[in-house]
Amino acid sequence: MNGAAKGAVIGGVFLAMLGGAGYGVYALVGDAGGDTEEGKDGQTTVQAEKGSGPVSEKDAAKTAKAFLAAWAAGDERVAADLTNNAAAAQAAVGEFKTKAYVSKAVITPGTPNGTTVPFKVEAEITYEGTTKPLAYDSQLTVVRGLTSGKPLVDWQPSVIHPQLQKDEKLRAGAPASPPVKAVDRNGEELTAEKYPSLRQVLDELRQSYGNKAGGKPGAEVWIEPVAKEAPKRTLLTLVEGEPSTLKTYLDAKVQAAAEQAVTKFPEASVVAVQPSNGHILAIANNRKDGFNAAMKGKRAPGSTMKIVTAAMLIDRGLVAADKPAECTKDVVWGGRTFHNLNNFEAPGATFGTSFARSCNTAFIKPIRGVQDDAALSKEATEVFGIDLDWKSGIVSSDGKVPVATGAEEAAGYIGQGKITMNPLNVASITATARTGVFRQPLLVSPELDGRTIATAKRRMKASVQQQLVGMMKLTATSGTAREAMASVGGSDKGAKTGSAEVGGAGDSPDSWFAGFSGDVAAAAMVEGGGHGGEAAGPIVAQVLNAG
Image (cartoon, rainbow, N blue to C red; front, side):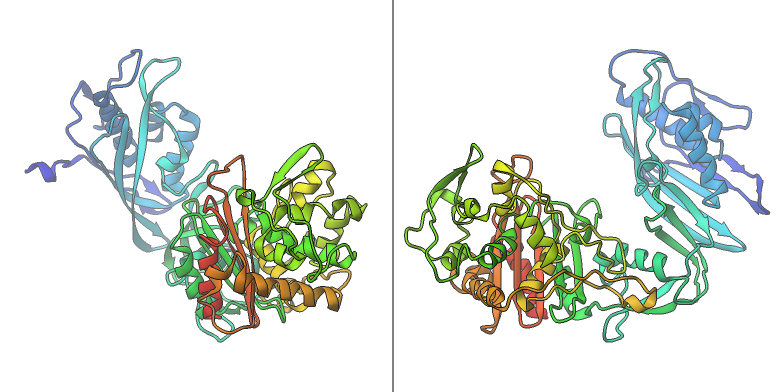
């Protein structure tokens, strides 16, 4: 046998009757070396020795080999004793066969990298007469036991499967929710394979509407989340169910553009909505953690918040798009000094020009005339519908504009401080500015489940809306959004840039961008992406062009 083929089957076949199915498991081994002995069941185990100091690569390999062999053999007690959390490990290894219905597992250790040992799992899942393969790569790390001094596997759920997070479980069987065939507004099927950003969205839609839309469940392997409201994450379909068709308001063409656009930047998210009706056209994320930041994120929106601030200031008669606004290098409010980017100033500029150039000081100086600490919060809620418990069809996070005083109030006027938003919120703000009316974003029709849709207390005054749209158009053609919006055709387009320093990240702020073109409004955010036009801007432009 050559070196590449090293790892012959040892221990034969461990067979136990489990729910009428045989559990035959093969453990593959490498040349770990060291002292070993054969246990009562013929399984090779390691004789770990007490020690101190860092675990050697040799000891890590020996411990990993023994643990993987015990796991593959279905011996949860032996496997558990080779970890630093025996109770959790014993339950997980045991449930690998009893709850995930693994009927066979070949586990092959790879070459150690220090105390980290990669391995490959090639399992077979057998449920009610159906058997399908499930293969994946994972890794484990060996540490020294705090009390025993022995090399032990540092127990993490991800040892069992790399997608398992804390307290999550690997499960198989008949899911509670039947499958659904999600289609876009034109009837085109939306799949996670074609549109990866929609995987979590489609899982949530299935959980919410699978039983309401009809259909019959099949059999699957999935990740069981900790929170009951969180969607299960399907890993493998064992038996196809009978899906029902669920129509969404998404647009496959716009979704495809959004998917492509976010791949240009790490940690990027974008949402597109239709201002005339609030329908969500696209949701896309490019994130390592798989989090749906586009709809659930909570980050300071930076100067995109100036859309709301400008509407409030114009509504109260404190500024006007064509009237002078004092744009100085800096301003002190509440004992804190606020600066413009690169300390620029614009003597004699109008408020419209200050908006287009994103002059911070021109937005903070009028605070004295507002004389209402809750003014910005009221405008956000009463006109733009922020924090009104949106029910789009899946879970999302509402924007927050808390009442603030002093320096926090000034920070809020330029989208910093305690204000939090996500691209869905900012896209909706942009859509409201575009039409003057808040229309709650919707992913699926409320008629599916009779849910109540949020409505704002009042619509924007016509004069305010006209000035706001005019300033956004100015920003898109000759302001901070000019370069990013140059590729968007037509003259009916507007935008607002933003950058937000989160956690003191002055050198790499979050990049925000909001824009509209015709009856499409979009907003994007790139964590650590820099200034608005640099990263988020091109994403929004690409989405607007598709719409």
